[in-house]
Picture 1 (spheres, helix red, strand yellow):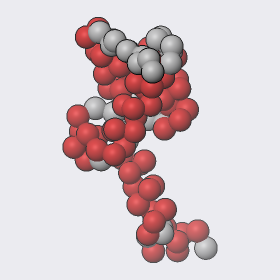
Picture 2 (cartoon, one colour):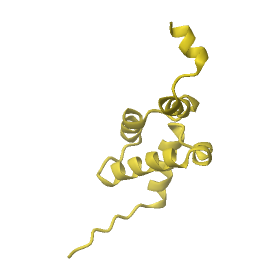
Picture 3 (cartoon, rainbow, N blue to C red):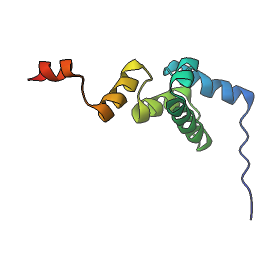
Picture 4 (cartoon, one colour):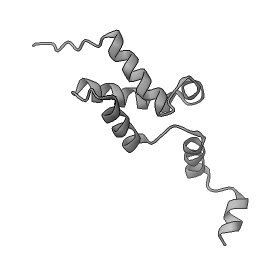
Length: 93
């Protein structure tokens, strides 16, 4: 059985980190929602290892798959589980 070795250089890691930061997946997201950060980092890393090595292409794929990180994304997932607040439900009627 052969093993495939994927070497990621420090410059590659910095580029991946830059793509994540530009999309809003920075240290604050890591602290607030580690699962979301890990998902974004895994996606970008897998894309890079599959041959997508352009920062703009990585950013575009990240945004199309997960969107930009922000407070609205975290609150929307909460509302998906708990439902809209009563104030928002009243405004829809």
